[in-house]
Image (tube, rainbow, N blue to C red):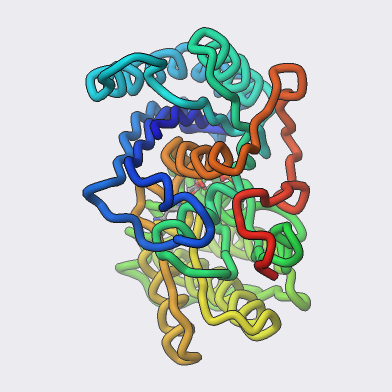
Length: 350
Ligand code: ATP
């Protein structure tokens, strides 16, 4: 089976082809770490880089309009090289249906419909946040993990129950990456700020910042205001970066631990672009080790926004017969993970 994935919810115009000659690897009964010799993901990405400030929806959509056709063409050419025999070059087209920026999603949806109709193959509408979770579950072979999604526009804990991924806890205001990016814009650093915070923190000393966890939810707006105030007061920016990492990641780790405890699960997977941060992965790994839980963080190309995770989940949806007609394939900028009926897992799983 070969699936084209298309991603473009915000900044990454990305296309991928996922190929497996082992369809059993896609069913719930045989969930396991894929055999690298039988699985193959090629990802082509073209990131939007704002000239100044953060992501501007109209500019991002203009970027998608030119970059999506290019990346799709590149991976389809790769698929064509590997294709022998009759039939279409891919067996299905998976695309990010949401959540994300409406103008960007509409371009992705249009591209996916056009390719699916041209090749006469099924269309697969993927929830971007569920894809962040499922790539970790698929790679790790974990059965029923809790997932921490730490991305630009989101921050939440997901756990599976009764056919859906339930939101166990989430941000009460901005996404975690967006919060960090707001601080870095304030100190004059270009987008994205997360990697720059990580580099700067290597040379800093800890500064105390507000820690806000309420039950299973967290808030980042107070910590960002306090970090900006510290910068305006002349505190070295490297020190503030240490404070930001230690405080925000401790908040995420605390709620992740509580989610493990409440669900009784001993498996945690990480998703989202902020998951590329080594300090966050270290804190989560330590917490899991202390409780005897297993932890999996996908490699960076599968953590940040990427079409590989869309193609992999699309393949599992196709195996489950979870396809979309063109008429019902509209995108949804507010598509929550708990709206998705999880058709690709066995019905006996709780
Ligand atoms: P979403 O998946 O919610 O739509 P997104 O589209 O913004 O999120 P992601 O690729 O998941 O995209 O995450 C991008 C975010 O990750 C940015 O805010 C960026 O600053 C942050 N980020 C990237 N690398 C690091 C790092 N090393 N440390 C901290 N944050 C990072």
